[in-house]
Length: 396
Image 1: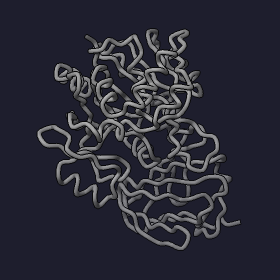
Image 2 (image 1 turned 90 degrees about the vertical axis):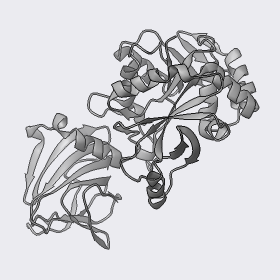
Image 3 (image 1 turned 45 degrees about the vertical axis):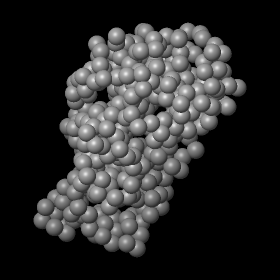
């Protein structure tokens, strides 16, 4: 039996746009002729997978259908959530639709994850298929590349999950990694009957109301419109809290592959830094007295640049009225001025420059500095610079 991929596509991705009233959901952002949902749809074209199911809401239905058409996926089902009830009701409702046999394996994927080395990922899915039972759950862990407070973690004993840790501080994350902890990717793998049995046991309210929402759903043009009255009565809980922290039958699939949820501009900057060759164009290189910069990608309300600050180069002391900036150092040790703070950065360190903050980059050393910069705002032009000091005489 083939594995049924279920793509969770209802998230708003507000972490990237904390001050914006209107924003793009992360899974639909064009990062350069590709989106995260598009990458996910391409992954589920592999021969091990059955036709995908997408769980989303009415706000995103049009964009989901556009992506399915663009990626030439003709067989699919969409389950439409009528209200926000977190991931547990969304996951259960998707599993309950009649198209899925009781013993079919379901692979739950986030629409907004970037996974590289897809062959290794799919091989791990196929390898563990026969281990699925009517009660157990497999979750995917990613070997950490750094102690990050942006991800959850889990610890194991003989590949059985013994403990979850939700987004710890960096010092705690270091301890978890020293104990061979893994990032919790939020992807999991189980049979339909396992989902049903676990919800019946641990979350009877969610099961009862989601079952009604599916039974009373309207179906039209491959879309299940869940019954709003029943679905809204389901307790709003994440799948982690509703099921994973209750059951003891959780197995870990541990992977050492490049993975990111691109949940911060730091991660987005790093992604462009790793792949800058494919975005580089000579016509987008601009020279300045302090060095140069290249525009790697100009997106909707964001612009990605690579700054090159030559030895002894000093940018003007400046601020912006219409944009904030996120910097990730990839080379060298720049000295930073940020309002009344002064500090030196190292490679892989990041700093956020809020809208209106007075800031400067200096390179007092003999080696060049390189920084990947994400500008985020309503106006992303060189005209939005207010200079206070400039060693090259550019203050008007």
